[in-house]
Amino acid sequence: MKHFIKTFLVGGLGGVVFLLAIVPLAYKYNLLGSARVIDQVIPSRTEIRKIEKEVVTFVSEGGQAEEAVKKSQESIVVIKSFNSGAVLRFGTGIVLTRDGLIVTVSQVVPVEAQDYQVFSGDKILKAQVVYRNAKKNLAILKVADESLVPATFNEEELAVGNIAWIVGRIVPLQKPELFLNRALVSLVDSQKKRIVLDGRYENYLSGAGLVSKNGLFKGIVYVDGGKIIALPSSFVKEFVDGYLK
Image (cartoon, rainbow, N blue to C red; front, side):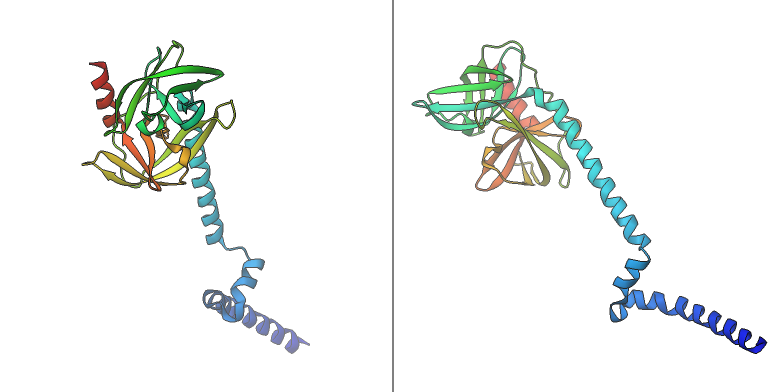
C-alpha cells in the first residue's frame, strides 16, 4: 500500500511537471489546434490587455468627438442655393461674426444661383454673397441676424497623422441636422495651402468645419473628385481679412 501511494505521488508530480512543460509549447505552436482549446479554458492575459487597451482608445476618441461637437455646433449653419425655385447646391457655412457674416466654400454658393438661404436653428434667413474668390474657393455671405455665434478659429497647423473632426449640418427636409465625420490628416500641402483628409467621403461635406478635439476650427472642408480637402484657418483668415479691409 505504501509502495502504491509513493508511486502515485511520484507519478502525479511527474505528470504535473510534464503538463507545465508541454502546455506552453503546445499553445505557442498551436499543436493540433490546442491554442484555441487552451484559450477557452484559460483566458489569455495578453489578449485581455489588448482588448482593454482598444476599448480605452475607442472611448477616448469618443470623448474627443463629443467635445469637438459640443463646442463648435452653435457656429455652424446650413446653406442652400436655389435656381428657379429648385435647390442647386447645399452645404455648410461657418459663422464669422455675430451680426451675420458667414464663410463657406465657393462651390456651395455658385454664381449661377439666384437665391441663397441660411438655416440657423429654427430660422430660415435670406442671404447675399458679399465677397467671393473662385480661385481660392471661398465666399462670404451676409444675413440680417445679430444673434449668431461666431466660430473660434485656430491657425496652428495640423500635422500628418493628427485626428480631426468634420462637423457640419444638412437639411433633409426643413430641420437642420448635425453630422460628424472622423478624419485623419494624410497630407499637409504647404505650397497649395491645403490639407488632404482620409475619412468617409460624402457629397454634403463641402463647407463643413474641420474641428480639433477642443472644438477649435482648424479649417473649412470641401470635396473634389472623391477627395476630402480642407483649407487651413490661416488661409481662411487671409481671405476674410481681404474683405474686411
